[in-house]
Image (tube, rainbow, N blue to C red; front, side):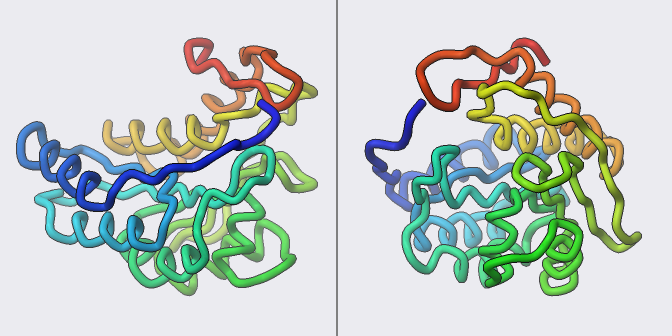
Length: 213
């Protein structure tokens, strides 16, 4: 819970085989990307998504760039790979405040401004999650404008996995036919519930508990 001790990335070819195995056999209702530790992985995943029979399944991109403790989870060049290869394929992206700044190439900027800027640049909907800003609300920007998705900030340290819970729930709800705003609100509720029910293991950021969602 105190930090990342090491990172070992899966080979891009193995990830491509995994995607093909699922898409060709089971089928795909939604896609959610998470930690992709190298630019090569980002580019390979993007290539697989362009080639796979997705039939309009929404692509949710959670651009995991650093850990809860602040350790980098992406090699140099990762932000460029996201901008050029993966964001153009996304229906919606879910960066936290720091990831949104990195994708926008900025050292500062509030969530609303960043959400609107990334939407204008890349065309995808953008949800800047509220875990790290002054306001706990998520900020959603899409073709209909800017929407604030309110939520509470809990006085607990069990936050590890909140972003992954949010983006996974969002993808699941979109796969089930929910509209973006309905899905975004449901994802916010799920992430908050997972943090509230989290397990206070260790001395750092303990894990959320998705069984409490």
